[in-house]
Length: 206
Image (cartoon, rainbow, N blue to C red; front, side, top):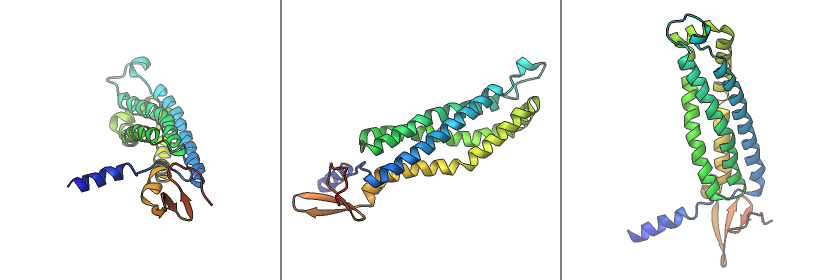
């Protein structure tokens, strides 16, 4: 039992965040793509949030058919704003081989990602409900914008997921699970493909 516990404890300390030099530009690329996508959706949804009618300001309308649409677009706008810098923090940890920074931002970004998933369903649920349709009639142009922005959002959803998974792969999964250890005298080399990288050395040895 103690041997197994010791082995498990040792394994957790040998799960590195150590991206290869040739993978670092890929991490930067995916981070930039994710940040642009997030900030773009923040701008679009923030505008939709503010432009969605408030019945009390436009005349005698019973109830508030726009409340769910305002909530969904507002929540998505604020989520995208946070994700725009959290994804950069996650990538920064992977690029600099900083396990603490990578882990902190990875989990923070994951929380934002769960909110992103929620909004991916909440926006159409609000827009295409009976109340959402009534809201769209109060401002047809805004109703059309909510619909079209959400379609683009849905189409690009897996592109964003792919970016997060790619940063995770190049920063953590590849050096942890897709490399092999080779004993070379007193030094243990981490071999990935044809590259051998000594522990603590982020540079590639030819």
